[in-house]
Length: 93
Image (cartoon, rainbow, N blue to C red; front, side):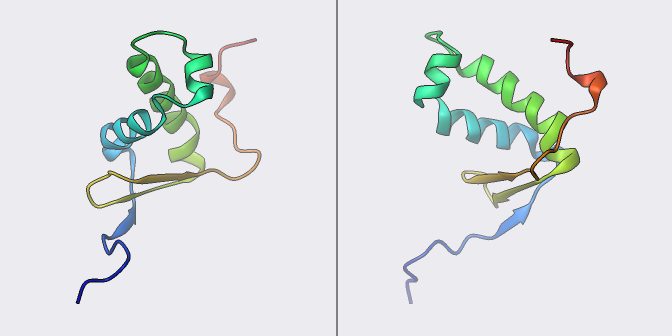
């Protein structure tokens, strides 16, 4: 019987899966309006990858939850309100 929904397993992932999570986030946000405004380069994939990797390393993995389907083609990042990276990892403003 074919089910009308996706039956792939969703599981919490860790820092060892960061490359796959970053690749999915970049692919899914490459042409969003905000990303085009914030990273106004023709080749914005690399800067976006650096930004997502830094956010995952500094905030999402230590303080939140990162979930993905088994092949990481779909990911979700949940971070509680007020979560922040350690002061030493944020450059002074």
